[in-house]
Structure formats: C-alpha cells, structure tokens
Image (cartoon, rainbow, N blue to C red):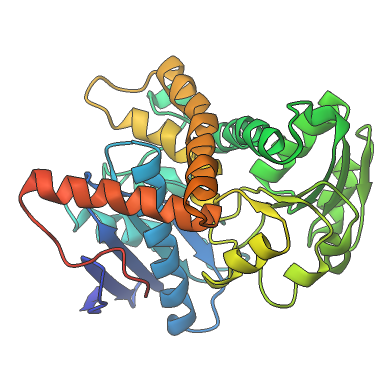
Length: 362
C-alpha cells in the first residue's frame, strides 16, 4: 500500500492511500483532535478525481470537528472517503485494505458509516481494525446511527419552528424533503405520522414510489423541490445544495436538514439570512448519529438511554445558537461556528497545546 501525506493548512493530518492489489484509493483527513480522537464516517463515492474527493473530505472533516464540539461528545473531527463505483468496486478486499489503512492511525481516527456504507462494509473493516463504530447491536455496538440522526433532526425542528413561527406544532406545517436515504426516509415517515404535509424528491424513482402511499406525501421531480411552496425545506441528500442558484428559488421560511455541508460557501448563510430564511446549522441539527456513536466509545460502553438523553440537547443547542445570533447580529451559521471555535480554543488552552488554527477554512 502506497501512503502519501498531503499538507493542508488547518488540518492535523491528511493522508492518501493507494493499494494496487485491492484497488483501494482512499483519503483520511484528521481535522482536529483537541477534544479527543477524530470521529467521522467513511464515505464511498464515485468521485471524478482525487482532487474532488480531497475537497469533499476536507469539508466533511472540519464539519465533524464542529459537530462534535457543539454536541459535547468529547471527540475531535475527521472523515474518510473511498473513491470507487458503487456497483462494481465494493469488494471485501478493498474494504479490508481500508481497514488496515484506518488501523495505521492507531486510534487517532475512528470511523463509522456514511453515504455508500452499510453494516456489511463495516464488518469487513473490523476484520482489520478495531477503530470502527456503529456495528450491529448484537455485537454490543451502537447499531445504525441513522434513526438517531432522524430523531435529533425532529427534535431540532421544534427549536426552529418555535423561533420562526412561535409554535411547536410540527403537524400544521408543509415540508419539502430532498433525499430519501435512511435519515430522510425516517424523517418523512415521522412527519407523515404526525399528520404533516410532505413533498419529497429523490434521484431514485423507485425509492420515491415507496413513500407515495404514506398520508400527506407527494413526490416531485428533483429539480422542482427547491421551489415548493412550503414552510420548511429539508436537504437530506448531499452537500452544497444551498448556493447562488438554488437560494433564490426557495419559498420556505426555514431550512433544516440532515445533509452535511449544505451551504456551498460560507457567505450563503448571509444570503439566507437577508431573505428572512432561518437556517439551522447542519452540524448541530444533524448531530444525533454522531452523538449515538460517541456514547459507544466511552469507557463504560454503549448505553441507549445516555445517547437519547444527549440527543434531546440538540434542541437546547439550536436555541443557544438562535439566541446568540439574534443578540449579536450574526447569522445562525456564524453563531454556531463561534460556539464551536470557542470550545476548541478552550480545549487547546486546557491541553497546553495550542495547535495551528484548525478552524481556518480550506
């Protein structure tokens, strides 16, 4: 396996691995470990180039640092990606090579599932490294994190609707959900069960048809989801969907979803704010999954009650961000960044090890 270090300002370590025998081409990015080992999922995606994968993994790793800091997990932030075709490249050999790659960090990076990864792939990884979380409950692990992400998202919606509309009645609102993956699908089912109106889209027509029978659910083409006349727009697919092209199309008054890195650029939070759209910072509202996994790595082991109690605090975290934003004339995204950066700064002072500015944008 060929290992190549990639120096990146503001990141502790970024490493590219290429393994000729298995076909593995992967990147691990450790953003910051001031608060603890870097925890972050492994994404499998058909990137068009290594540079595209590097850009993605850097954004995701920084987001994990901020997510863990704001959720008080006692962990740092990192991320890993594998470059490959979803249909042909998901082999045991490739994932076992990835496991050896992860193991080489000796616990500084701990992985979990992300887009394109399931229990099967995690079980291949764990044959080569113990630094894997989110395995099946039968193995004593915390299981699939997606239901916990969805639970946290619903909890966060209460804070959003109270801030914007002065109500916690989620059932009276209209939601536009972009992406029907594990988390997005769970959120749609929950909202439908509450009696809400839900408009959905997904790149898979087959997946969309699964939700048509649910009460209050309507399907629209992917390109039409932004312009749905709704109360809450929920990005639950990939990142970068809030940009100069899509923001002017939005008719929602709240944006709150589970996708990571929803803003293509930082300044897009200001554009949302100026349009009167309340944005729930993604790394706060979608932290349920990482909170659940973080409980697993505690010395006493996984406890679901502890995880659920911590996930309830997503509501309080968003209230704090909204209050700070209002008081200091910031956007919610700017306020959330400030909370995370302050916690990292405090940790570096406690550790007596001021790292380079890991909060700088890359």
